[in-house]
Picture 1 (cartoon, helix red, strand yellow):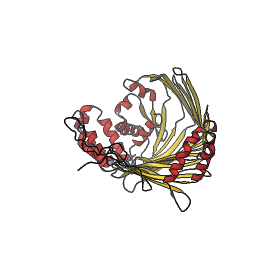
Picture 2 (cartoon, rainbow, N blue to C red):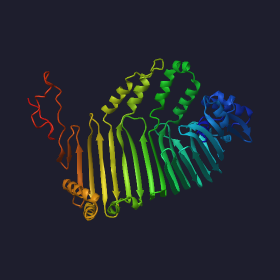
Picture 3 (cartoon, rainbow, N blue to C red):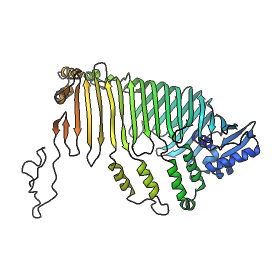
Picture 4 (cartoon, rainbow, N blue to C red):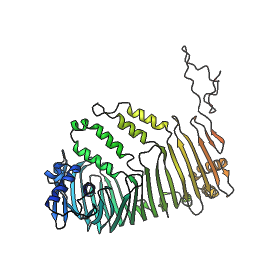
Length: 513
């Protein structure tokens, strides 16, 4: 809340008059401009206050006043210092913005697990940038902190988290196809999070500490519809009561359509160096660990992507059979997601069908309708080229799955380099370890389905069809499911069409003409 609300206020800044003089009249005008997006009540109750400070305007946000104005608020304690930022008009119609977001705050409330409390501190938090009202975005900016700490407690969990020094840079430019292209990079040092689970009811105690000397974040947005989204915020503020909202739903629909596709593409990554998780069963870690996420906006053929990458993986060996250690991956690169995702048709149909004068505003079967439409466009679940490897073994896989009916249509290709190392490890372990002895025949059987490639890898091309059949490298592993005959004899219910002995044979039932 501390950082989001000021951002909303900043995004609501209008264009200052050319070479505007900073004075009380300008402060009044700025207050009115902001009230369009935060409501006049915020000004009347003191949540938001604009004043003149030197050659700039000071925008102050009183969080205590905000909480007191909220209906049915259940906070038992709320101690957050007022937040202020300065904005100075520039001759080109943009604003210079500066802020000090240093803070020491605490609050308590009754949550699902009883009394919950949180305290956080931000030391030497400073930021500055240039905001362009025409883009509804910062064309440039930077922020820094010296450190940040947070403590949270409830009946079953105690969390202490901290960061060292951090910096963030952000920028935006006008996008070629509308909206803005935005970028953000951030680095934080000395990340530590200690989580202590202590459940008196079950008696379970499990402390975990997560550490990394450096956390980095990158985010990129292409074609973000910042201005139309701001217009939607203004509409919501102007139509707070139900009657006004119903009367102006045509305008709402127009604004919703204008905001599509919301963005063309969003991508982001989190990265950790020397990541470690200390627990009672040992330390898990990786010299490099990153997660990535990407998503198209509302489109007719969108894509969504996830990726997890790690190198130098370490797993506590005391929790594993000795023979398995040599088989563990030290590096992983997992890529998965979806394709051919039609959110555009769903969104536009929902906007078109919406009628706030009806209860419910969408037909009761609307969910079923758009779900059927969505599946009719055959969206895909995708496994991008992914690998798990160590110095002797590399497993690679990729594939995709669609859902033409109740059962999936899937194809996955797996190839392994160093498969003989797996066989050797299990063969040796099987002499003394019963668990390894169970796995050894399975490993040999799997190898028998494989196809030897020229480079020595073994490949398995697996295909699962909607009829229930599964093939591996063209060989039938599982035949099609039995065909069900719905006709029944009215006297005894016996199915006379299935050839005796074949209904449960695994070869599929065969119908008589």
